[in-house]
Length: 76
Length: 293
Image (cartoon, rainbow over all chains, first blue to last red; front, side):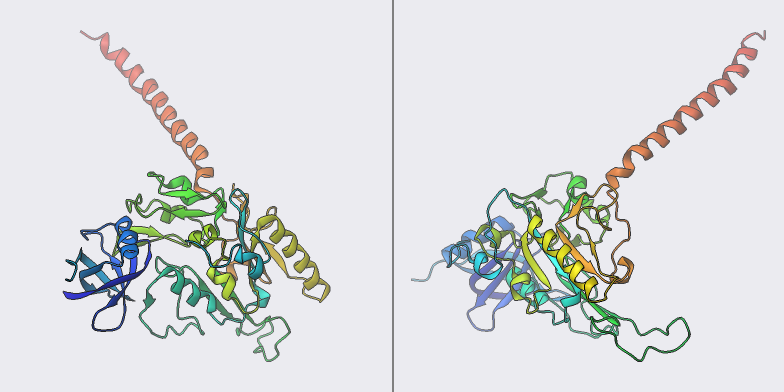
């Protein structure tokens, strides 16, 4: 399982683009077992909150399947 | 979302988007050049993941089909089979007669079989007369998948929900033209109010017939092939120049709900018949046994 941290820049349904801190942006899809729902994503995007995700590569498409998503503690 | 330019669709598509009106696509396949700009625009706007690159061997069609992650699909039909006389086709009449291309999409049927099959109300008809899946309500039962006569709706196994074209519902709410229609360089995909599009499409058919293309016809407009079997019209309709099956479209699509009443009647008739037969058979035997000591 991979981990990435960044800011959600785009949300469509359960899909979102994550501008990561240390690499290219990722297109991610919430899995059915994720601890977040599609309706949670727009608020995170509007707040420009930094989030951390744990994901795995999808087999058939170029995207990551997110199993865990949580806002990061704000940096001081 | 809020558009930077109010009523931008008036500038790009010649129509303003207002709730309560009916909107859709008219796809003129004779204008499609197979550039796939619509596929790319759709994927970009809707944040749909790209398929793993690969060659299918199906002409220039490596998208293959509509799916949960592909809401626009440019179909390539190369008509290179030998003619009836056994000779290989060596000439190319005008208007892509030997090479057909069509950008396929959800038809946003009216009435919509997928919507009728949805038990949770996740699929609903919007204020623009389009059909959209609400992701927070979809429970992934998949009833909508076989209900669609065009094979459009698909389940994403990653998130367990049904997905299909929304006709860019978020863009419509912001007064924007759908991404695919806006990106189409030849206006093969035209967005607008259904009545306007239908009138425009009928004029285009007459124009093509005047140019000698007697095989041009509309598929999905009211009273045309595709608007059959209880489906009154397709809000995304097409101008075709060959049989619907050539474009991977059913010749006579039907609503499953149309088959419910005959199926139920046949089932009830069978039960009634079996009950009557059992009553006659066992009633007679039972009556004889009852008299024995």
